[in-house]
Length: 142
Image 1: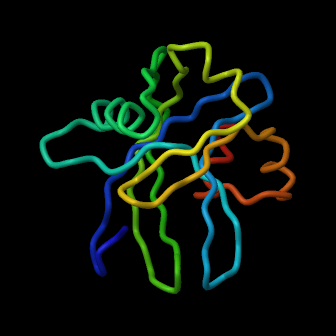
Image 2: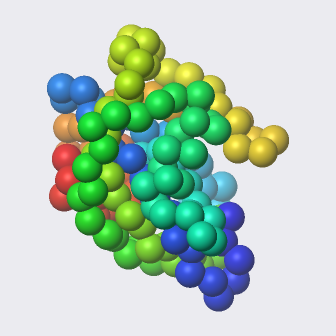
């Protein structure tokens, strides 16, 4: 998570399949709110955002990506768990190389010792604000 007063550079992969988007589910205990975000993670020093995207998907899901296209940069200022955060996000559109990922309803993956749920969600549920996609600027890419 973010260190106070630090800007975190992350990379996220937008994977769509028809009217579905592949996202991870998160929960803010202070706001008591569930939210969803595309998968990815932090860019390490000396690593490109593209290399970080591939590494994160491999580490978290043992998944390879294909058809990777750069979409743009999103700056995200937010409050999570009662603490301010600031991210600069490199956004890519991509596909899973292996068809098996498109057959899954959901899967559990781990970041350190914390488990997370990744799942396919109809993108209309975010567009109508039924579900919360973060950062909100990500809606422009759907």
